[in-house]
Image (cartoon, rainbow over all chains, first blue to last red; front, side, top):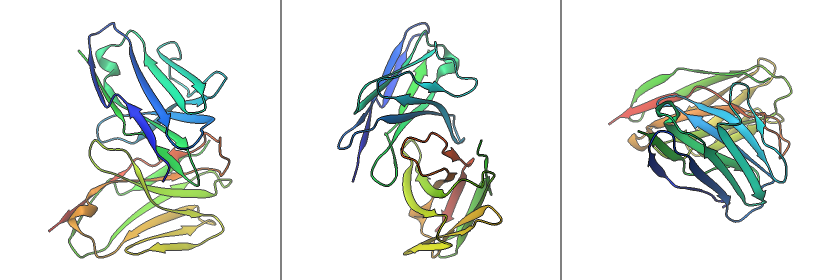
Length: 113
Length: 114
């Protein structure tokens, strides 16, 4: 079946640094990908919709200058958490609409010290 | 926009018993209703879905029912096993490929006791 790969799976960084997370569709093209944030024991909260070749669409309350999204090709979207702070620590998951369903990446656990 | 509510938030059953999780949605235009299973620290995986032209769908021990008039849909797991323990999310959306309207329920933590 279709696969979405996300990297890195875990990252620890110092406060003030930036972290980039990649989301790739491995065997299908995805003009649109989605980025979510998931707090412990909570649901998936859509942060933004990543559109290939154009600007991302952010959900209300999500800082676009804080969470930079780039969708430069039909198989790759990146999320950069800029000037990370401890409150940005979370589980970030991407997804893409593949053949017939929505496929999720493995998730990236970000810990900001 | 779409709003999805899911109940219960936690559910504990004995192995072999059935488990039922219920969701309601607000947008009558929604016509795709997937259910995802998420194990701790892993990605959500689609376990079953239903589209608005179908009232019920079954796949082995898992079934989903949809009442479009009442705007609610349910997940039924029969003969539960310990490996069914996970968090289950319902979702609702339209069908367009690039639509960003999929919204998830809050999740149900299912525990199956051996």
